[in-house]
Figure 1 (spheres, rainbow, N blue to C red):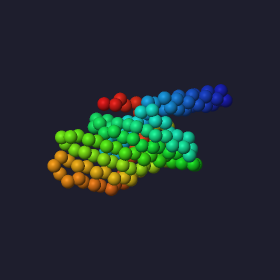
Figure 2: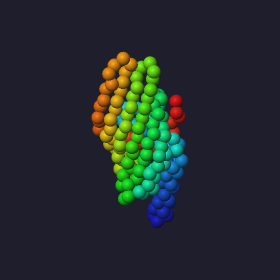
Figure 3: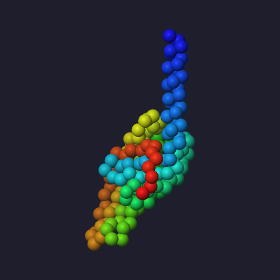
Figure 4: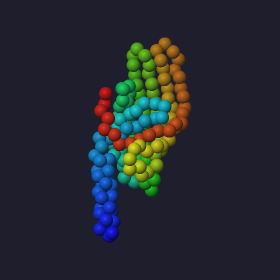
Length: 149
């Protein structure tokens, strides 16, 4: 009985290590607003406690450029992301989005972490007045290996 318990503990430990290695080796993170686009942020890693790391990314399928900063708070309970995204099309629309998002830490072992974002979106469609929206909505952040279009 002890051998089976030891084997099960060892297999569980290996699975956890493999999952951590897979997550650590991911090409970056994907960030998705519930009602918005998905942005891939290549080479971003969650910073150590009380530290920040800059990131750059691109919207999948849409081409908006995104830049921001991710910071882990002092007690490592929250990842705070601030981003700015700008999409420009000379024939259709311009879009500017800036928000701050908060994600609880640690992340779940599988799947994205749910958080909340609050920000401002400004859209101008060709020939029309700009539209501005202040919003708060759910967001998801998790490891991914999406190619940039």
